[in-house]
Structure formats: structure tokens, C-alpha cells
View (cartoon, rainbow, N blue to C red):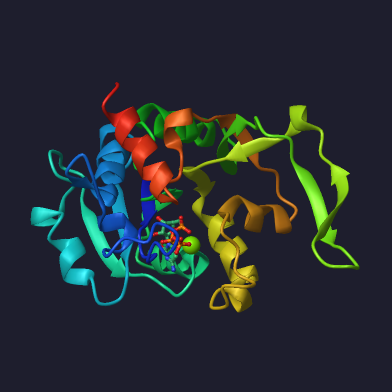
Length: 239
Ligand code: CTP
Ligand code: MG
């Protein structure tokens, strides 16, 4: 079955606080979105990449993929304008994915260092028959649920059992029909940042469908803050 990837890159990167949209910020001289596209192409299991770009930056993003392919490879790239939320961007990317791709990966440009092996692991689980697949890593922090306190601040309501918690990453993989159904069911929230969902597997869970977990990798961290960018630089310098 052919596999297409939606590479979400239309965010502004508010928390990173850089002049450029986050996906254009260089890591060791190469924009995050190019690192991410290369790893997808190098996996050997992705047939096309649809990149969602911020409105107003379409030309900048297209220029990163000369000849409409991932640099150094043959995998075709389509650049489309993303939406106002990540959820809307994924929906826009899905709509631009040619019909022959029955499997879909959704990947964040912000996870620029996710390796080709991680993509292969997710696609292998799809090929084995799972309809939705997410990579995850054990959580090292203790996680507590809180509520607003009567006198201000917050109060702890509950402590989660760490052993059964996983921090999930991308690329996440789906049977296309399932992901499209999940996005259709949640379409009314897509344009409202307060209600939109940042995790595609979460939308599939809302349908009551099972989501399969595969091992993630520490290098697939999401570059969110300047500290994350510094950490990614360090990881890139050490294979
Ligand atoms: N994204 C997207 N469209 C949006 C918002 C986000 O395609 N409207 C993408 C980002 O480009 C990123 C991924 O979704 O690759 C994960 O989002 P996040 O890390 O939150 O990135 P930003 O939204 O850019 O950052 P911030 O929330 O700090 O503004
Ligand atoms: Mg965001």
C-alpha cells in the first residue's frame, strides 16, 4: 500500500520566539522542515510528502524543495497553505494528498531529528494491520492532575501512575480512511485553538478505535523552546 506523509510546518513558533516561522529556523544550517522531510524520505517507505506552510510563506517553503522533491532524493513534495491550528493544517494536508495513498503519516516539522528508523517502525505496524499507530516513550517526570484552587493558584487532584504513562511523538501512522473519518468527526473544532486537538491519535480515540503504540526515540523531541533548539543542536552534533 502506498504511504503519504503530511508534514505539519505551518505554525509560527510563538514559544521559540524566533524571527522566522519555526519550521524555517536553521538547525546546523538546515531548516527544521528540511531535516524532517529528509528523514521521511530516507526511510524508504514514504512515497510523497505534503508540507503545510504558513500563509504568506509558500514561496519560501517551495524554494527549500527544488524540483519539487526532498533534497538528495526522489520523493515528491507538495507545499500547501496550512490552517489556523495544527488540526486544520493536518486536514488541509490530507485534502492535498493524492488518492492512491491508503496509508498516511502525520509528522511535525518541529520533530526535526526523528530518524528514518522511527518512520519504518510506524509503517511496519500499519503493514501488520494496525489502523492507528503512535510512537511513545516512558515518562520520566511524575505527572499530577491539578484544578484551580478556591483561594487562587492550583491544587493537586490526583497523581498518575507513571509506569503506564507514555509521552507520544510523531510520525503517527493511520489507515487513511480512519484518519479522514476522525478529522471529519472533529471538523467543528479545527479553527478554534482553544478546542482544536494537537494529537491525531486522540481524534481516532474519540471514535472508539484502538491506537497501537510502538517504541519512540529520545531524538524525536519536539523543538518548542530555545532550550529544545539548543538540545537538538547538541544531539545533531553527536550521531
Ligand atoms: N503547525 C501547523 N499549523 C498550525 C500550527 C502548528 O502546521 N496552525 C505545526 C507546527 O509547524 C509544528 C507542529 O504543528 O511543526 C507542532 O506544533 P507546535 O510545536 O505547537 O508549533 P507552533 O504552533 O509553531 O509553536 P507555538 O505553539 O509555540 O506557536
Ligand atoms: Mg502550536
